[in-house]
Length: 116
Length: 110
Image (cartoon, rainbow over all chains, first blue to last red):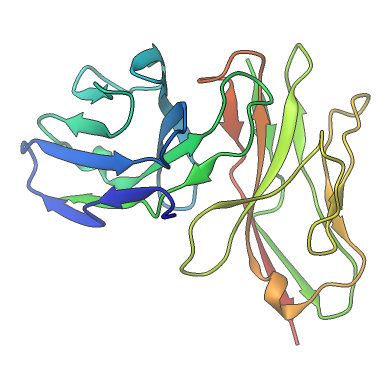
């Protein structure tokens, strides 16, 4: 079947606009992660879901960032009142299990957000 | 706090030469270590993980707890190995304990 998909692939937003980024994980995968990857950097953890439960949101940089996974499948990362420093590639990953040693994380292609 | 360092941003070697990509970590418990690779225009994918002790595409990595290192090695580099390589660490509790290093770009010259 298909891997992790993300939409849109590219998003240009004017400063102050709200954006919503979507992630479709691999069917049946319990764990879902969001990462932010700035240019020239490694992915940085934002938040983690186990099914529909958001177990860790410690990486979200401000209260303008919000993520949900209401039915334990598709997830949406929302950024309100975007700022230029939000410009980055946002990666979604899913894995079959949970906890340490849960298995390989499968990554989506990412959404490149540019805030002008 | 957990941290992963990769001292080289760019590593260039000639085809057929040995290659070693360095990774050091700091974590108070027993982490799981990974190497992820991103080829040009492709998504990030797992290369290998220390618990499986496999050799993938000729690459190996040994976890050295004394030196807190997980260096990636290949005896004879190939041009198709050119890519971005990220070392990553998973702590006991998933989530924020999954930390990536800044990455090393490997360029294998003909």
